[in-house]
Length: 327
Ligand code: PEP
Ligand code: MG
Image (cartoon, rainbow, N blue to C red; front, side, top):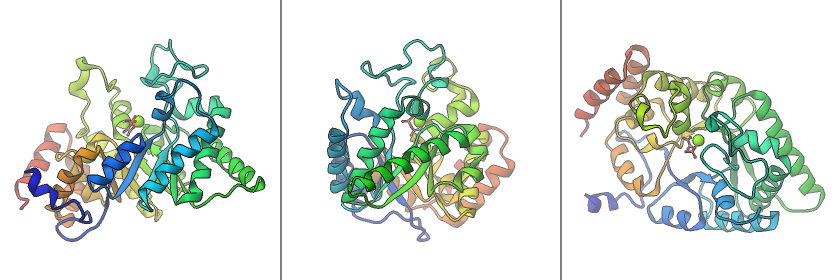
């Protein structure tokens, strides 16, 4: 089967009826970027910058970070590249970082991601400056993880704008940057109309969005039967996000594991997602699968699920019905 997929390596990602979208890669290092390009990634939909901190024994300086980001920008050679600012905390701990949450009883509900960045703002400012410097070498997108309120987004944006202006005042070259946020918290999904008026794009992080929507720790085996991307409540939230963002004329992607899940992809294609970003090894298989989906009938499927599905098994049945008729 791998042989069959390889013919998709240098092809654009499109549906049976010719609807194009980007099939991106989730990566965390320069070598993973290279690997993803070899697998035919259209874009880097999620660069997890926290691994730069996790793989270092000291707080990386602005210059150190700028050189890492710069190399990545050069490597992707104009392909869409989305850096996520550090998503530290939760299950990702780094011992040298100040005030990192070692003893919280609910670390996934605690001091993590954008909350940590806003709390330790000098670390955040250093990262923003390094990212901005890399934009002189090619266009980039920057997004913030785990935004839950408009006020957090406003704070992050104002730090970004201040540091951009500081660099310009210092005569440091900066290039084109699009700004976005991840949607991983139900509160942000509910407020998406307000959020999208302030940014260029959003990316839905379903790994977290599922856990926060159904109140299930994504790593807890005992309750994992409840952790399902096909949960109709999750799908309704995703539908609400995509439709609101498109109504505003902006773009929306998805970078959770579901982006490569054949049980969810027809729904996502039906909504008209602009980018699906996944593990590099899943790219060819997913591109081949998408090429068999008719986006029009997938649109009807998505409507039907959002309006009528009450349970996960009803969703699964509807998707199964759909996939059984695919070429
Ligand atoms: C997500 O939550 O879906 C996501 C892509 O972020 P991470 O898996 O790094 O938390
Ligand atoms: Mg996440």
